[in-house]
Length: 130
Image 1 (spheres, rainbow, N blue to C red):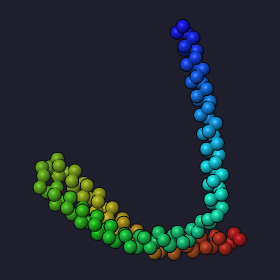
Image 2 (tube, rainbow, N blue to C red; image 1 turned 180 degrees about the vertical axis):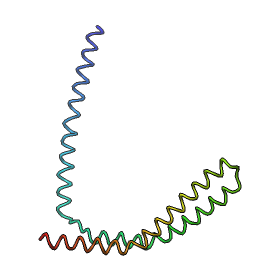
Image 3 (cartoon, helix red, strand yellow; image 1 turned 135 degrees about the vertical axis):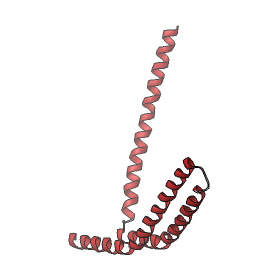
Image 4 (cartoon, rainbow, N blue to C red; image 1 turned 30 degrees about the vertical axis):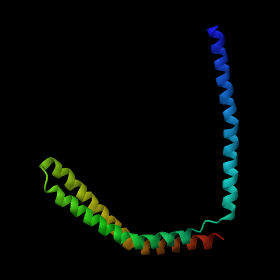
């Protein structure tokens, strides 16, 4: 009796797994077709996207950099109050935050030049390829 139930359970598990494969296949095909149809209606405008990223960096970058500098200073000052093993971890964290603030400041200042260079490069590529 146990062997018979094992055979039924094995067959039932094979039927369940094969029945799940067909809807998953159709769902994947529908996703690919819908994605292709959606992409055909909207074109990807890289130059306007780069301009939007540049504007975002120009507005948010300096504020984020200033906030990171203040946060790094707070961690540095707090680290001076603790014993040496805790001080080392807090000072390392403060230095890492300050380096991140410097990187954000440099990227937000250089975003204008980077956007101009990439727009010039992309406009040359698109005009030469047509």
